[in-house]
Structures are given as structure tokens and as C-alpha cells.
Length: 130
Image (cartoon, rainbow, N blue to C red; front, side):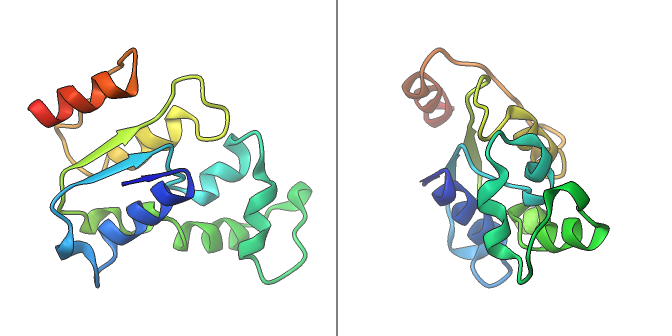
């Protein structure tokens, strides 16, 4: 289970070729799943330059920058995911917008269901009872 950066790490490990087989299930809460997408989608892109080995200028993002961030994103290993995974994202979350989740879930399954719940607890109970 992981929220925020924990969600990022959970997403990375569930798809990483070395660790993908140890998971029976995963829960990712507000996970950053595609860092290249998040460069423009989040309201606080300031944390992303920490992963770049150069001075970063948001006014001139290059194709190489986008590829660099993508290669370090859970979405780059999503096709390896075997474990059933629950994603929890707030529909009004400015840090990790819902679109970050939807573009990652498309390759996971043809039967992805995105449901809205009033509370996280409600969503978790529905998921575990199914």
C-alpha cells in the first residue's frame, strides 16, 4: 500500500521485472504514475527536477526530458503488473489528477472499472468484497 510517493514506489515495484511476482494485491493512493505527464498536469511540478542530473528549465522541456521522466515512471513497467491493483485518487486532487490514473490503467486491462465513492473507506470495502 502506498500514498503519494508511496503510491509511486508501489506502482514501480508491482511492475518491476525483479519484484512483480511477490505481490498478491496492491493499493496505490494518489500515486504519481507517469512523471513525464505530471510535469504539466500537477500544480506543484517543483519536485521533479530532483531526478534530473542537470539544471532544469520548465520553460523549455525537451523530448529528452520527457523520455527521461517516463523511463523512471511506474507507467513504463505497467505491462508487467500481475497483481490486482486498487487505485485511489481524489477527483478534485490538484497534485495527482485523475487523468494520471486513467492513462496508466488503459494498458492494465480491457476490464478496468473506475468508480466514484464518497469515502476512501467505502471504496476499499467494495473492492475487497468483490
